[in-house]
Amino acid sequence: MKRLPKIATDLLMTALLLLLMSYSLVGEAAHEWLGVGIFLLFLLHHILNKNWLKALFRGKYPPIRILQTAVDLLVLLCMTGSMISGILLSRYVFRLDIHRFSAALQAVHMLSAYRGFALLSLHLGLHWGGIMGMAKRLAKKPSKIRKHALRGAAFLIAAYGAYAFVKRDFGDYMLLRYHFVFFGDEPLPLFLLDYAAIMGLFVWTGYYLAKAMRKSKARQPENDFKK
Image (cartoon, rainbow, N blue to C red):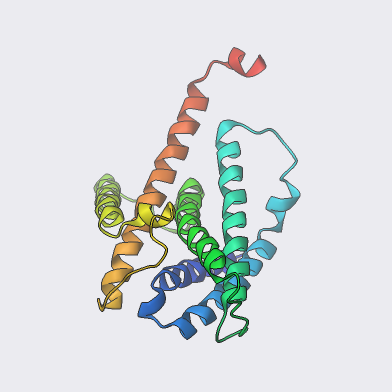
């Protein structure tokens, strides 16, 4: 029961993050209000996970923890950049709209948004093992057929996510090769489907990367840890 507020907060953040990426499809005013919403949820997320901050300088740092911490700090950097630039560019909620630095702020906002989306999804994947462990404790033990079906579905989502990543020029936006986002008049559900699949690609990558690193550590001879 103690984990339910954390799960609910993370699910809401994920939903808002997908909607935020749609920008003009939901409207500029709605985009700003969604940004305020995810900012409040981001603060709540850190309040609920305050033990992570307390343990940041405690204990050992094996490779998997180094990677998780590095990704977490980069997520924090991207979220901070996105929120500050979004507030300064605001035309509806905060009504600042600083024209003098608008080009630089837009660049910061786009870089923070797209890289933050990728890093947040990777962050979710790196911690997916813990989420799956909690789900197993709450549900009945799945059969082998169900396990294989879920793994197959995850692979298909990741494969479509790779296709959507290329189709949507996601990498070009991450590298700021485009300074404006072009959506056209496509239906919002189609856009959300593609971006959910891209998120799934990063989650899948993070999960199997963490799994490989844990297996590598488990196979490492004990003497290697004493060097």
